[in-house]
Length: 236
Image (cartoon, rainbow, N blue to C red; front, side, top):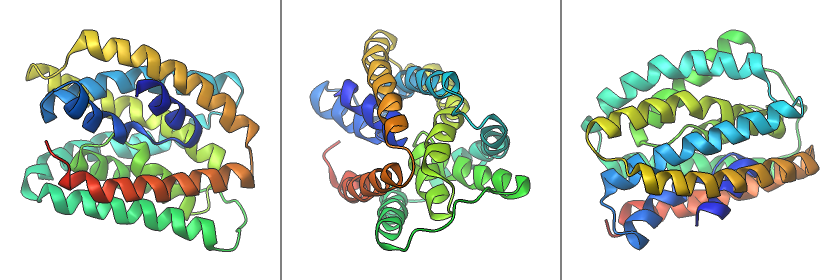
C-alpha cells in the first residue's frame, strides 16, 4: 500500500488519506496509532517530494513559503476546534470540496493560469492549515483542490503541496508521539517505500506537464472525493 500511496502523492499531491484506513484494517492499529504512524511516514514523502521538485527547478519556493506562513499558525487553531465538530461532518465536507473541485476542473473550460497575490496565498495557506488540522489530514488533500479551482497551474500546485505538508505533519507527529501513538519502526519502513513511490510520482508529474497533468490531477480528486465519502462509515 505504501508504494502506490507515494506514487499518488508525488504525481497529484494527494493519496496519503488512503494510508490510515489501511493501517487500521490490515495492520490492526487503532485510529490514533494509524494517524500518528502515517504522519511520521508522510515526513519521508514530503522531503522526497520537495527535493524532487526542487532538483528540477519546479518548486515554487516563494509561493510555497507564503502558503506555509499562513498554514502553520492556523493549524494550531484548527486543532483546538477539532473536538467541537462531529468527525463525520468534517469528512463529508472534505469529500464535497475534493470531488467538487475535481469535477469542476474536469468539465469546465480551461482557464488561463494565474499567480495568486502574496496576501491571497497567505490566506489560502491559513484556510488549508486550519482545515487540515480540523480534519486530521496532511495539507495537500485540501490544498490541491483549492489551488486548482483558483486556476493555479497543476505542477505549481502539486509541488507546493509537498512543501506545505512538512510543517503540518511534523507538528502532528510530535503531538501523536507525546501520546505514544507513533510506531516509528513501521512508520519508517512505510516512509521508505512511500518515499520511493513519491520519487517515481514526481518524475511522472513532470512528464505530464500542462493540461494533461491538470486533467489527471482533477480525475484523481474525483476518485479520492468518492473515497472520502465512504471513509466516515468504514469500520474503525
